[in-house]
Amino acid sequence: MNIVFLGPPGAGKGTHAQQLMKYMNIPQISTGDMFRRAIREQTPTGMDAKRYMDKGELVPDEVVVAMVKERLAEPDCQNGYILDGFPRTVAQAEALEGIATIDVALNIDVPDEIIINRLSGRRVCAACGGTYHVSMLEGDKCPACNGELYQRDDDKPETIRTRLAVYQEKTAPLISYYREKGLLSTAVCVGTIEENYQKVLAALKTKD
Ligand code: AMP
Image 1 (cartoon, helix red, strand yellow):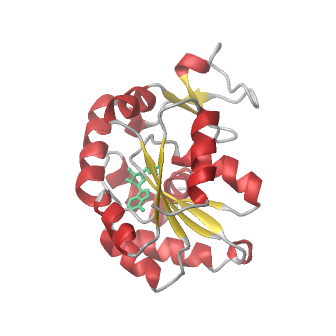
Image 2 (tube, rainbow, N blue to C red):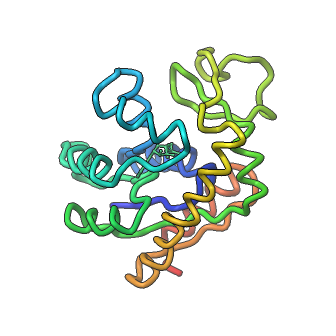
């Protein structure tokens, strides 16, 4: 099954994609994670992407599309995948149509107040990539692997505002884009992680 996860930053796309990846045994393809890795490795793509990411803006379509195209050609994608954070513009969705056949676009619908609270309290483990909310943490180490936790630069308040505005302008139109193609399914996620995950699983079995 080829799945696209839609939803604003902080909707839980990464969290639920990781749960689903284990359940369905298909890879999670997070363009944000791919860029963060490229930045750590100081590749040319990483250096280019960093200029946009630090400001909360989108990396240009052609850079992202080329990266995803290469990734989807790898053997582990042949039985399906979860695209997490891609496409983020109509131009990316159109380019994706030339590369892959999408079975479902799952829209994770979360109100703005919840998003802002989640993003500003989000911490990421530098070692395993796990994400946590400060309210769930007892110390300053990763509960899963004891790695160092950090706050993403783009989770700082001013950047969060830009990212939400960019989402509304550039990415939210994808909801009607996929609805018109009959591929949209919506999970309204306002509960706990586990409750929301159950909504995601249920939404995968139906279309809106
Ligand atoms: P994420 O981890 O998905 O929130 O992505 C973090 C940042 O990476 C975004 O704010 C963008 O700057 C960049 N990025 C990730 N995916 C895309 C994409 N599909 N198109 C453009 N920029 C992206």
